[in-house]
Length: 375
Image (tube, rainbow, N blue to C red; front, side, top):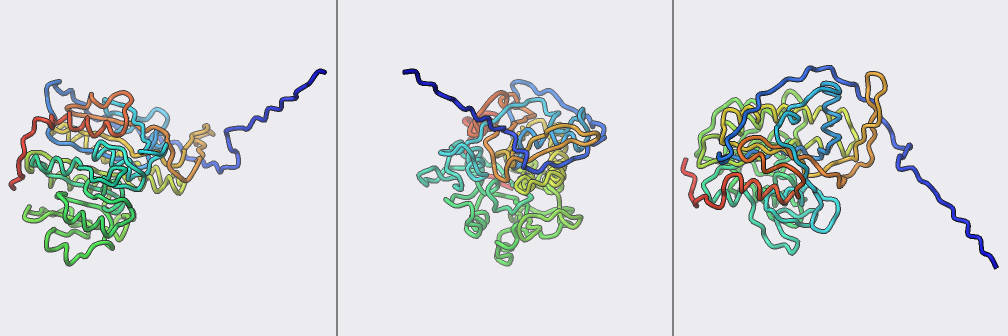
């Protein structure tokens, strides 16, 4: 007896046409070329600046480039001389949240999503800020979110829930962080802060000079910083933090985050994403100029993860058509850009934990002596 098998192959298109598309105008801004210097191979970095574009994957950069200046435009992030790629998965998940990702740079260890600088068994992991504090370093964080959000918090807090904001706020006040600028005013006892910190709540405060008798905290909104002329930008806060940290102690570590690029990705709001990225890219411009003047400084730019599954589908006249794939994080690898002494370490494919060890290698951490910061 002969048997005839009928095989039916169902082909499902990977392109979900039910998802809403959006038109974004192509920009016409000329590229502003910025000076890029060469650094001696035997020069060791003293200072580290880690700039984070939260939620930024390759297509967030591509769309921003197109929307700001056009197809042949070059952003400031594009002009950084060393480029690599980072994998982002967390300890036991193909996707990472910001807490696990930031713990990877901060400690060099993978952990579970939601954990901040604890290992998967909830053992405390020493952060790069805590490590450098023992070497006489100053440190700072800047964020357009609350200063207690996951990315900045992984540098100073240890908890199994990134959402314990009041606990995280208390850990910040008692941490080695010398300057913290961002939002989150509703989470702090402002009267108590005044005992240990210079407290800034107005944008105009960034025009002032502060002594080093106290640490400094700037809280410019109740939660994330609402973008307006009355509120400081990432660029403005970062410039102020650098002025405060530079020439302090034996060196400094600064993390500055464009936090709300990620929020725009969650909202599938491309125009908002480009607006937030523009502030981030202008911050990078200033950081490159800082490295040019302070040749002992290493600048690294990366992201914790991609948000939104952004796709650029085609051009339609003077616009490009884009589509979001999700309102969540994805496992798309993210870029790593570097400039300054040690920047060559950040080429090729790396895990996000590698960034921690490469930063330590760049400053020759193993040979740094334990010291205190006397100001």
